[in-house]
View 1 (cartoon, one colour):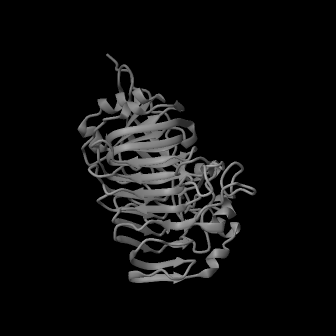
View 2 (cartoon, rainbow, N blue to C red):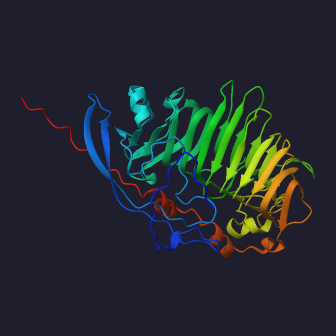
View 3 (cartoon, rainbow, N blue to C red):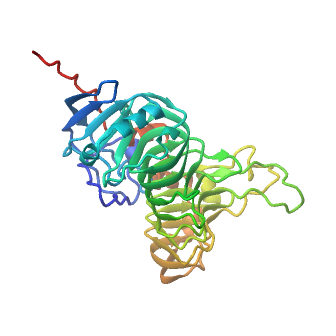
Length: 433
């Protein structure tokens, strides 16, 4: 079901019998790959920058384990492809700190960036990445910033970024990500451990041409807020956002009295797309979303939203993988009930489309174009095309879910994201007199 980002070149692929990489009932074709030698120009960011030539091996590309969601085949656009054997890259090695990454970024020339730059971050923890705020690379190629030794080798706290242009942050294991303003940037192959992913236009800083590629929130939690939000309120502007290969688990609100017999309770959604400032397209592609207490996805006042090849799960089917948690609404004996558990809520702004997708649960928006898409409940129509009602979807089991979307454990994510190994660059030769 995955659709590669158009500007990427798909890697060669190889079959793998590992159970973590098994195909679902509607299997993708087997992936094939081979080992390549790639020549790089290694530029070590230090007091004296040493330039050297080096080679590294690209391991076999990841095999797909899911029909929907993360599988290692989605790659950010306009980004040096470290799976490829055809490109020479500038490689900069830095320690695990925001200031070290920013120093490396500021030292780059436009010519180096155009040739393709990979900033490799050594193992460690980065609690704060705000040193990148305000960085701007206006060229057509993004600078890739990635963990050198695999996605779990560099951990992070709650990363808050503001006003960044022309970067790809890829392959990190962090608590949360909150981006306020970004242009021509990608956030890819990230595990989010505390269920907060935010992308917003804010205080005059727009969001334009931003990708969230295989950003994974794997575990449900108890908290009084959404798992993910994409939003902009006028006069702030957001245009052209792609969510691809993603995975979003529920947030169940805290079970406690909220006053009165019919008091307002927290409104937890898994993915909220909202705001009159969202004037361009938001596309949710090959992504899995499991509902929180209110809804899996909610669309508020956004005109152009498209679901492509996605799997949106609500109701009792969500609890097949994510049972209500102790201390959260919906748990046995809870004061508060489970909530509405809709697949998609909100009216949208007029151009809500769906293709090649599955929705389990109720659908509130007015739909424009719907093609080759199943839903569990009857009664929803579209201006063009229509839904196929499949009431058996309401009986989807935990085993059925495993067939269509592999649970993204750390082991699974390592298997799909860590197929690329970058050895240390060769030492700089000592000149002879």
